[in-house]
Amino acid sequence: MNRQEPPNKQKGEERFIASPGLTGALIAFVFSLLWMIFGFWKFLVILLLTIIGYYVGFRYFRDRESIKKLIDKILPPGMFR
Image (cartoon, rainbow, N blue to C red):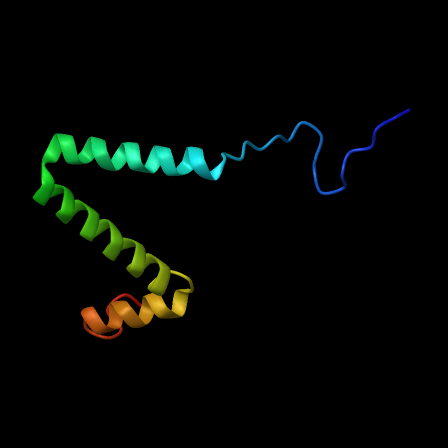
């Protein structure tokens, strides 16, 4: 019998999906490594800046209009148009 592949997968296209446990362990390892290298307070600063960067990226970089509005708030309006 011939086994048919699902229609959404192309031939030769394999995607590795890590388990949630492996992903969590990798994140914890990276955090603990940063903590050991930089110390507690520097680690907290790095973590805080990462969270702020994620928020700004999620909030403002979803569409082009919100980026233009953000740049117009920071710089004089029409400077980059």
